[in-house]
Length: 137
Image (cartoon, rainbow, N blue to C red; front, top):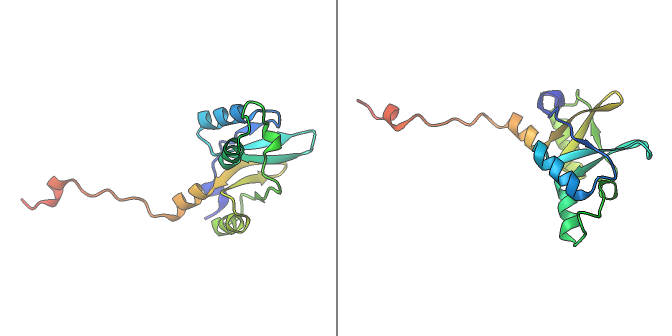
């Protein structure tokens, strides 16, 4: 299975001047664990994750003053839609992170997370038959 089959195409893009609180609100509203930080002045893409916000707030920083740009993950690793899920999982395990921005051409087309990969690899959960169906008549 490929990254394109597992990735979420809901890509929340924010600017580097969004505060951590604004970023967290947007992430919560979209129900995503990461946001792509587009910094046109610095000429690149970054990623802000739940963990980045948690680390900042947990260390006593003010989420209304701290910006996304100051807390983006350095050295972002990108995936291609044609990567296998094994390649994506290996990159995540090697880098110690849970999200990869998926690039196709110049821009982001999705994000793949550990949860997306597990969802594809784990067998579908089977619900037991109702008791009435299990008791012989």
